[in-house]
Amino acid sequence: MESFFIQSFGCRASQADGAEIGSALETRGLTPAFTAAEAGLVILNSCTVTSSADDDLRHAVRRAHRENPSARILVTGCFAQRCPQEIAALEGVTWVVGNDAKSRIPDIAAPPPEAPYHGQIHLAGAFGPFELLAHDAGSGRTRPTLKIQDGCNNLCTFCIIPTVRGPSRSAAPDDVVARVRDLAHDHPEIVLSGINLGRWGRERGSTLRLVDLLRRLLDETPIRLLRLSSVEPMDFSDALLDLMAATPRIAPHVHAPLQSGSDTVLRRMRRRYRARHYEQRLHRAYSLLPDAAFGADVMAGFPGETDAEFEESLQFIDSLPFTYLHVFPYSERPGTPASESPDQVPPPVKRERARRLRQLSAAKNYAFRQRMVGRRLPAVTLRDGAITANYLPVQLAHPRPTNRIVEVEIGSLGPETLVEKPLLPVLHPRFSSPALGNSA
Image (cartoon, rainbow, N blue to C red; front, side, top):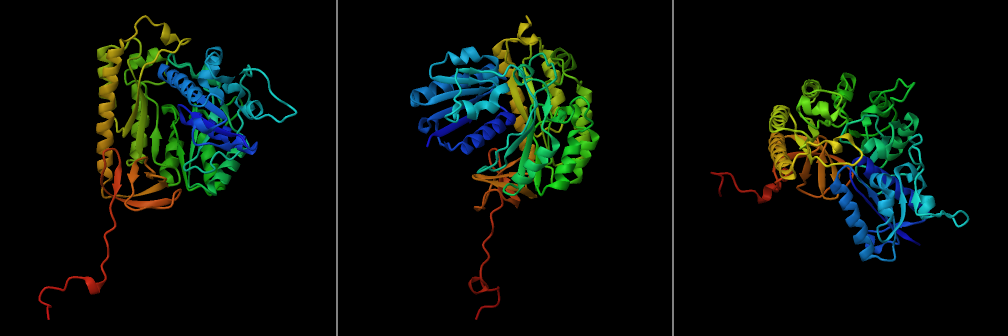
């Protein structure tokens, strides 16, 4: 029986894709392997949001082929969609499958004998309706990610994702409800993800919004905790924030991509909001969810970013109640308007700006964790600790079964975590020290 190994790079949506592919292959009779060196089939699910992501994929192909020359290597994902010929030329690659053809991977890599697939590069040529695959992507995992939306209609000048993922498409609400209901039997927390999650349901002719889907999931499934992965700031509507504040079954976690706190940079990025709009949304969320995790994606060194614009952005970020930042130095993506700008920021300047942003992120995260000391927080147990509903890792004082929601009392801080307060031993009265003045 053939074994397979899947490595997914990049965002939660990519991780969810990898899990779905793995489940589909298992239904074909293949068995998962722990490493690429042990597998007959190696699937590398690529990202292409930065040049570093492209490099990671190339290195992974070379390493897999070096360690396991007989393995068949299939590369899929965003880099495969963008540069199929380049990837096909890498030594050891058997197939390249674009995002638009991912659903064909079981037929390509593990076809029935009567219908073998031929050819190295597989692109569908068009992005069809988005459908949930009929496989359990949560089997054997804690906190499974369920991708319910794909594609993006925004035209940010730095981003290649609309090209490699296509237009925004949503999974049908009945399908999402059914999948969450099934996953909820074995998993207390499910992470809902998408390339542009806040646009779920907004296809032409639809009146549905993400908040409508969440209400159905709360009403029609037993799921104990839903977490939203990343939602554009202006899609955090009052209705959505009010629902999050009204129920403990939606994690108090707001991740809203910012990119820059300078209006002139946001304008050049072609983002659909300005700093004041973002600030209003975040303060509204903070007023309702003061103990929530607040995160943002921030870009350092976008083309043309001056020292003054960076300082403006840094001060804006410092003024907001963020608890963590995902910091990315700008990475040129061929085919995007920003890549053609003559005002590219020198790499050393980008690195220094990213360092200062990460330093600010670390300080904000430390202050947030410090605030949680002495609190009792709900958390989902993992294989190596736990993660709180407000997105903080916890070192547990004693082992717990995985995949459970427990309450932990926070006793102290680790370098980047919370530390559960140890349980004090309770002595039997027979072994307790005698009270003063009560000696024989």
